[in-house]
Length: 451
Image (cartoon, rainbow, N blue to C red; front, side, top):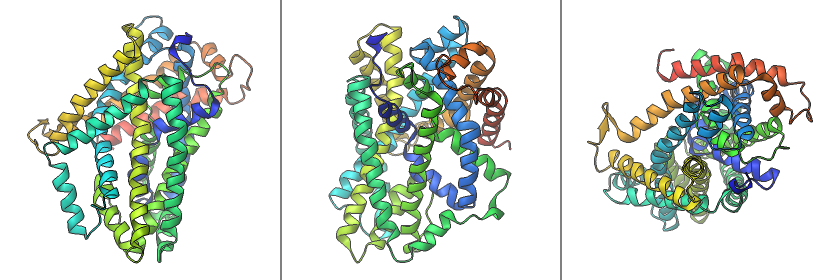
């Protein structure tokens, strides 16, 4: 058991697991959704969704992983007594590998933009910045090299193991990420006219709240915490038996939400200062924001340069904490199921992810004919994982923990063998049995456009 490795400290657990959840979506998706869907009203809805879906869902994966002390496939297999529930673990491993493949493409874009911002190549008027991104993303070689390079950087961390690789990297990356974020927030909020951006994010406009907005908040809570990827299950298998799972889940959810809100404070004040309405997705990060930083700090070009560099460094760190966790899921699987050295298992994942990254990068750039069902390979894998595989994995995990595993086993993990209070256990059990499956079903139907 000790050969698997384990996290060495409570702060390591929180930072590594929060890092797996904190990613590019926190930077470009949450702020945009909050701003366009009622500001503070959306944030309040999001908090509620984190409580009713995010924390119980996270706890469920923690319980499976820590009790089994094994990779995701073996964990579900052990707890189900060798029955077909092990397919849930396989689903999570496949899902995370596919996500790693196309996520590495965007992470590679961030890495290239960090290099370009250091070289002063992404400052200019709006047309220049837009054409720069189009030229880069459609290049037959550059996006592939940067994406595969990002996978290799991830490999260098994962191959060193849990404590020396993942935990040590998380203890460095997460504090630096937070520090960079706070510095950029301060610079952004000090710009002329920034107050309008702050009000845009935090002024509660309840008139915009609708059933669609509630479903969007529910979906954001589900995807933001990496539910359904087997990441939380895998990381929990490295938790110590005395780790307070509920307390850890609360800390991780808080840190993830804090970073998302700080990202809004970074983006909206700067955008308001120059009268730009932020877009969502890659266009925000690679087209809109470089232009915003250039205009907002036009009178202080040196400051604008530093802010731009720090921003793309922040994106690289956020992406890396996520790719590390996705890589570790498959690495742990190959190490334990095929009895391979960690180095060989890591190389298998790195190779698979690099091939997927290459195909996805070309499908949205130099080789648009690489399609499935009328979509680029990158869009297809994105839609497949987000719309079907993640909700399915999350749903099955809740049903597995809530209805299949013996209640006493779940209670023992929740209370650390009776050493912690069981006062909230009935609330958790009700949530995982009834509330979470219903919420995930709504997310699933909303993602498919049915509701």
